[in-house]
Length: 203
Image 1 (cartoon, rainbow, N blue to C red):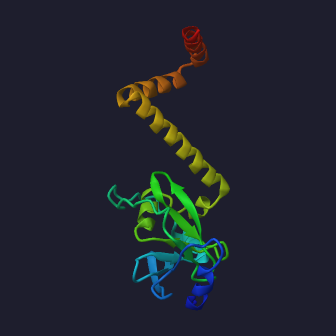
Image 2 (image 1 turned 90 degrees about the vertical axis):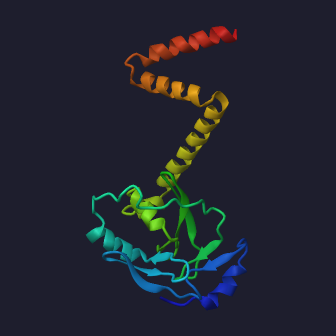
Image 3 (image 1 turned 180 degrees about the horizontal axis):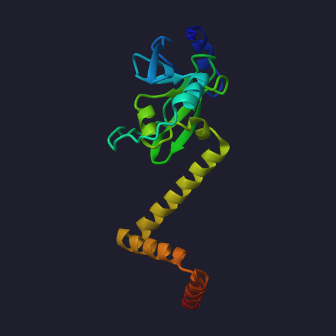
């Protein structure tokens, strides 16, 4: 892998960049395999891994279809990394772009806009694997996936607000009614009846 120490000073002074981290101790990454056939480069200091795009695509084509699910305790919980400094691509020297993972995982995946390479912090591969997302990393970087994540976050925020306003017990009852109503063949008539009663109460 190319050493990018000579690029660091210039990149750190780019407009809008508050801080930057060079991947690997002193720019050094060591050859490794994070899965059989998936060749990557590991930082001996942080335990993070750099996965070149072609390496990931080759692994996915030949080895990425194992249906066996890992045990429940396979991955440890990871904290939100949204305030972490910007990372630098060890191949091109470009700043990496961050993408939300979602699905109950609160960290981001960093990808190079130039080479397509992927950086994962220690434990993130295991966390992705626990959700079955490790074989679909390229989908995480799509606009449609990120839009779904944002929609999911808005819905979760609304549900949490509603739960806080009416209490856990009543919230559980409302959820049960909502699920029952969604399955009822005459749900449209029931909704009209309920809304009519509510309108009368407001008057």
